[in-house]
Image 1 (tube, rainbow, N blue to C red):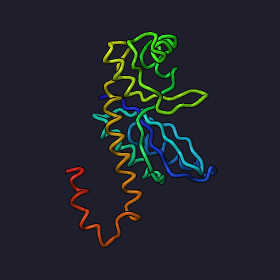
Image 2: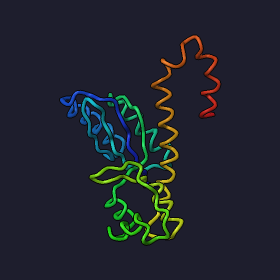
Image 3: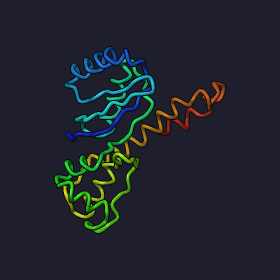
Length: 187
């Protein structure tokens, strides 16, 4: 079993419902083997960060989506694990100075992945891209599960977008025509 890190994004909910929602979700998680998530959100949207043990990334992500929806939240997306510089250092098993040298190109042979999200207070990187970079250069600890999560998260995010947009894109009288195309996605 591997541990898979990813984030489930949800539609917003009134802030006063956070306690009830988190109690339902954490209850479901406890009954299925333990709490492996952290929930945050408000009326603008929510995020649930998972560190789920499973046989593969597909099982990890699908089981998380099912539990989040069973808790009463609308799942609108899934993303791979994003990390800041401190997170990279911790997961790679190196100091912050080493990561700083890698990102600047001073060490590691250059080509360090650019941030996925650039912010003045601290950018975020794709852990799967960083892991692949580490693996290619035999630096730090590479995380094979992160690469698996990135691919599965990208797929399930597209499926969730399609599910959300279905009614506005495909009129009900055209759904039968599209059904065979969609069934090929998982056949």
